[in-house]
Image 1 (tube, rainbow, N blue to C red):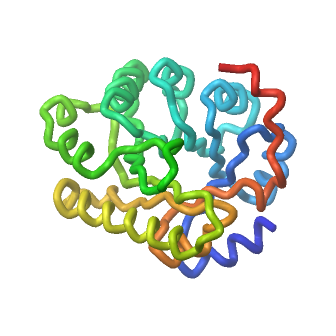
Image 2: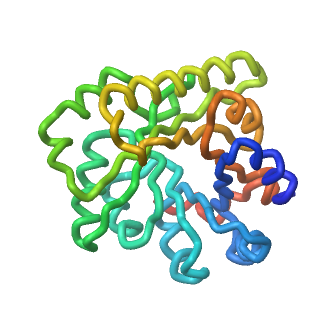
Length: 225
């Protein structure tokens, strides 16, 4: 399945993030041995031990909602935080990154779905933050794009419109705040059920778990904070 997905991504050069949350190290290593290097996790307390146990050339992506008190666990090594959804969180990422003399790449997460359970900025909030002196004084983070999650629905037109909206937001933020920044180029959108629509709408990164690993098993992590 990995190679089939990569073939579909190749014409657009969209990057595959293999979502390995709740999956054992053995399953991750199977994909690693096939050449996959980018893996995504949604809990810092699960990500940190995987980093310790698995090959160090894996690029770890934090894709789930990140609490400020958990940033310290991933700050030494995380490759990209997709889910930067508040100014408070970005300030904490900057603080923790400074401890390790790192600049951590982040994506601004925008709420494009109709569901209340999704996190993220709206455009006005993001613009207010980007214009603020406090944000401009952050030296240990680098904003390289945007992320969003579509509504969980069978309505493909709704999903497509939400992805179109995220691309519009990317263009707005790029034009106003990062026009001279060549690193601001990523649009992380699309998962197992909708990644092909996301690619058509301009995604540069898709986050795929179920198609690669099968259904997830949450029981062993339900008791953790």
